[in-house]
Length: 115
Image 1: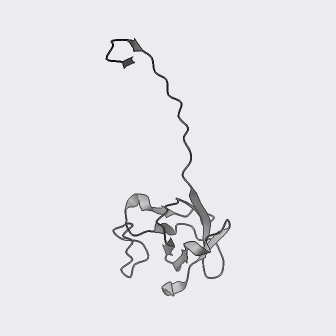
Image 2 (image 1 turned 30 degrees about the vertical axis):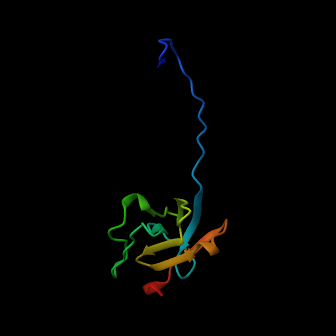
Image 3 (image 1 turned 180 degrees about the vertical axis):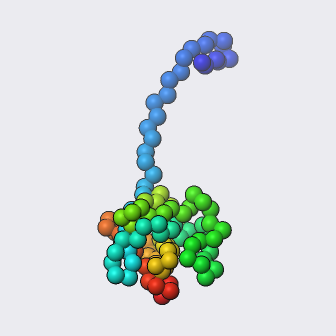
């Protein structure tokens, strides 16, 4: 209900249009090109605080910032204009790609030992 200073009351209707957030999609593969399930993937942004500390998973990262790849190695992230790239980590290795390398068929290859 809506009430104005004049005391008149009535129903108010709003028409809203929700637009989906821009997303980045891709696949994480191992050094042999096989899809990697369960890899952690995140946008590399200044506020993400992604820390590896010699581990095969991100520590101290905000839970909502990190996604896991599915059984086919696929991931989907909400894009952020401040993103500098995408990073991925798994026991198979570490991989990253800069925003200048993003494409519609994005593939990130994990390198053993993070090389």
